[in-house]
Image (cartoon, rainbow, N blue to C red; front, top):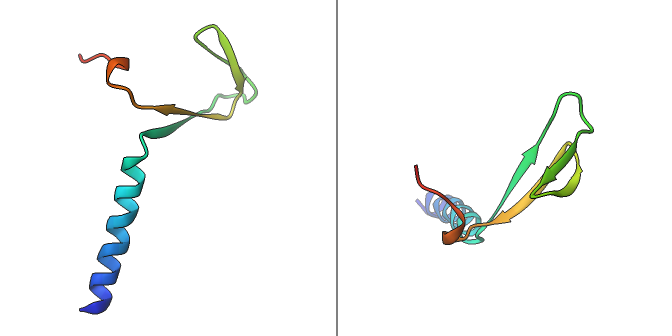
Length: 63
């Protein structure tokens, strides 16, 4: 029972830590690799590249 509790709390902590940060990464891949990624008129690098975003309530649209 003690091992179950420790395992459960460990898994729960991973979920709460991952969800509370407000940051998420999106990896952009292309074929062939090396494409220039342009976002909002600015170069963000060459693929594959991971960009990190923050969640803001005024920054999304509902469909």
